[in-house]
Image (cartoon, rainbow, N blue to C red; front, side, top):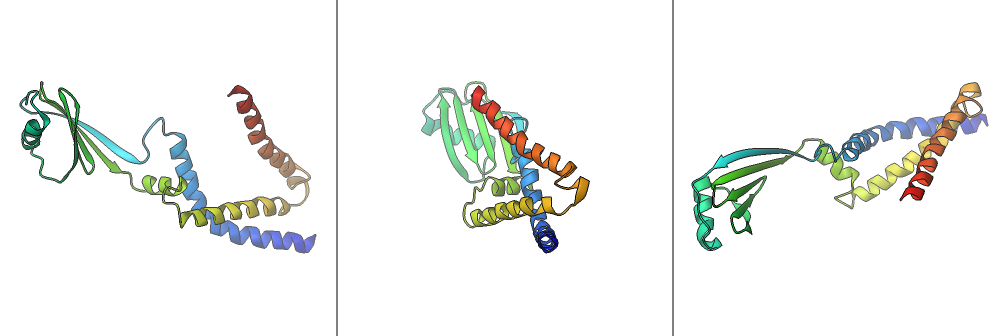
Length: 186
């Protein structure tokens, strides 16, 4: 048992250090993703009300260049959309204009990737797929190794036969109980 515990300690220490960076990425992103209904962790957004002279309800081909000119847009336009008889939208990189053709009211929507959060969420949600899938799978394997070696590091009343065993059982029971509860309520 002594050699087994020594091997566990070595594996746990070395792979634990390796896992620190990835754990921080997943933990920060996990908090952000869990609270997506409170805030957009991926993008900062701004709204700016503007006004132009009303354009009227003419055909889209006629009103489009007038709206673009009145807004002073010189950057490349990705797309335009006639969202309704009196609503016209212009999409640029990082910007969107919602124009009321009758009143001349404009809402300028700005959005930009949040530094750090966009990147860690991209990794956490595996949006890039390979090669991140391999990295994430290796990380999951490291977490399994840490979970299997950790309980054998401490002896006595603070280890598996004492407080550590109770906390280990609690850690296993919480997701199991939650799974049973959600299964019966959904």
